[in-house]
Image (tube, rainbow, N blue to C red; front, side, top):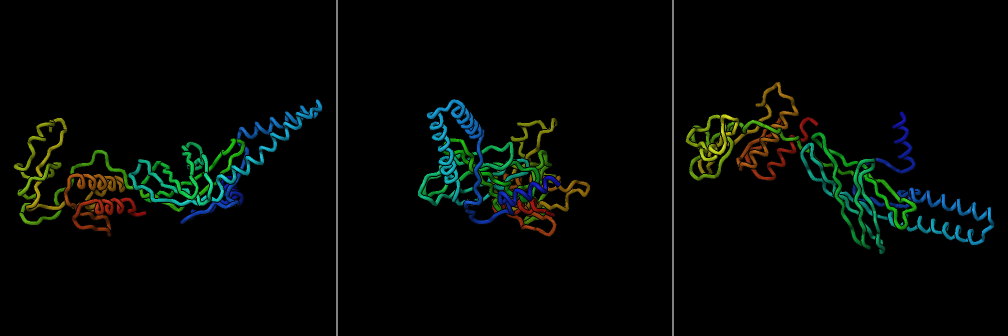
Length: 323
């Protein structure tokens, strides 16, 4: 109840509404000023000077008090103008795996013929680091903010807070902004995933294994690989008896089978998130090994291919499965 009331008051007072798309303009109503800790001490100093000047009838004390007090409105005007009338725009967000930190790119655009000094940008709330930047006249500056991820899917950017203590630090001019930006979070790859499944389709030979025309490297051993294709030099560097992996030679230009990564082929008793993590690990392994691989996840099906576009399409399907 109290949290809901607080959010309602913040929407009414500080204009914290729904996410804003496109370019956002910080007009006068969106910039607020409040005394900082140094500002409150400055107010206390003025009160002490005024009381002392009154008690002892000090003309110079009154003059000093009024001169120091005149600094406050000047500081308020310059601090407000340093932040107001900025244009804000959200850039692309980097796709990451769950558990990593995604980075949001934000642009601060200054279309006024004056310099902006020491504007601090960061996520609202305690515990988040902030970055300071200056913006030259008629130019833009970019800032990249990192935020941790926990689960797959779309992660909306948290509310951004902009603030400045320019020029004297007596007042804090601040504003908040909630961009309509999202980052795609892929499932976390399984740490110790089993080897890639056996080839799902054949091309020339009846055995369905890689052809033997041109040697293209080695890959993890798959059940059914012929013994003559074992990479004994790589196997000799590890001890299979102690759990070391086996390796098979990979050939290109001849016959062979394409790996098929099928969600339905995984054991039914496995947790859904674990299945997605295993498929994610297999996609990365197949891509790293240079193996063409097909992909099947519910109604989503991709033919055998490889490359960044194919990898990203598979990872995107995994990230958004049943969301």
